[in-house]
Length: 303
Length: 303
Image 1 (spheres, each protein chain N blue to C red):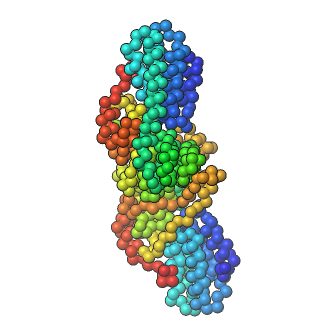
Image 2 (cartoon, rainbow over the protein chains, first blue to last red; image 1 turned 60 degrees about the vertical axis):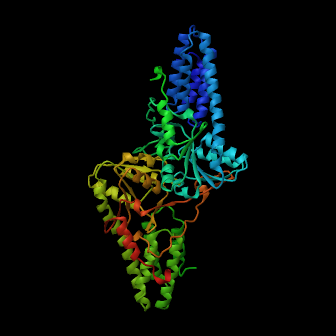
Image 3 (cartoon, chains in turn cyan, red; image 1 turned 180 degrees about the vertical axis):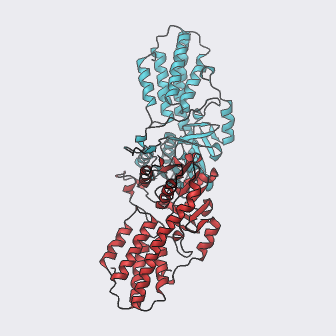
């Protein structure tokens, strides 16, 4: 189906990967595009562009809620539209994809620095596993801050256990509760820090359980921040597809026939529930984020 | 330790029972008191009273958050205070305890009738396993109502799975989600019905996950009712003890040493989050409930 067998395999791996965060998936996506540029048998810049479009669409389709993938593909298409000759187009794609992967890495580091003042003391409540939140917490620990972290197990896949284990290994005082208990524990915390899968005008898409935490934070006037690089901001004209249902067995193996088990991974938290959004470019208010998103547009071929 | 070996065993069984609801536990408690009345070796009414006090305190201590147990003991002490002779005291205790057990049963039936108009159509969202909610749903089904129920798995013990299974067996259209997803599904529902472990001026004590559902219901102006007989209203001067921590292994077996796993079963939902409280005596507003509770007092010996 794709120009190269490796690409087919890599995209399938991205599609089936429900453990990696959005950034890791986008980095894998960047690798796919570099693979395409290096191995393409296209004979013209035009043919190469259409290979990119086909590959890019497949990448987005593999994980349509992962904004960094959408932005990677979108940015690559814009980068190639001025390139008519084949070699120029290939070079432009490699530069764009690698530059994007580097940007993602720098974004995490910059977010960790900007989140530092939020992790100054007391208890940090987080949810599920965000590699950006992990990086920020490890950075604060490395800089000598004293704090504890309350993790959630994050059913159905228990990613929060993995986060707790990583933090404990790094010497951070770490606690863990089931998801249903976390909103009641919010008054013990100083701040809530969550990651993001994507951010749009509609709100923050993140692992289920984020919305109840946001509700509790609002009820108790607790600061609630999303650590979310601008690469996770969706173009205003991108329609986030409804989440595809996940395997019911992942929630309740061998459940009785008469019970319909619904398995979803993401919920939506309206932007106004966020105290701030920590991006690589600064800590933004929901209003500032709205302004940025409203200016982002999809490449015409992706509309 | 107790006047009778059976009582010792029965109280220990109540203490270790984390699956039965408050009503079942109170019915078991009533059985303990009848056993005491029938088997006591006390030689005077006074001695019997002090046996009752000792047994009653042990019952409360076994499950100090279970209001019907507190009220059973409290009511029994009041019933015996006028009885000076031994046989009169024993008879009074049997009458009170059995009357209370009967009252509990009637309370459930009456609540099922009063909740009927709330289960008239659409999707009912419930949480964990409440035998009162189950009875109300089965009653509505029996009366021919058409509705579906969305259950939560209710970590860490998955009582919600048991509820889902019971409903499905009864032919009710039943769905189940993990706890973290339920608050986001609230807009699909017509009403939220939850049970109660106890109700006081501070709020509704129920299985963790109730509070996040109440927050979501409030945010979406969704009717949120507790099915909660007045036997679950705590006397105003009863101090609900802080919940004792449960076994961390129940949340995460063999968790890494560096992670402190906190296992709790109950959360607290402020009364004003409730649209109404369905009791055997009618559907009450939070203000009406406050009025009733403020008049309830502990027997002087229990203060």
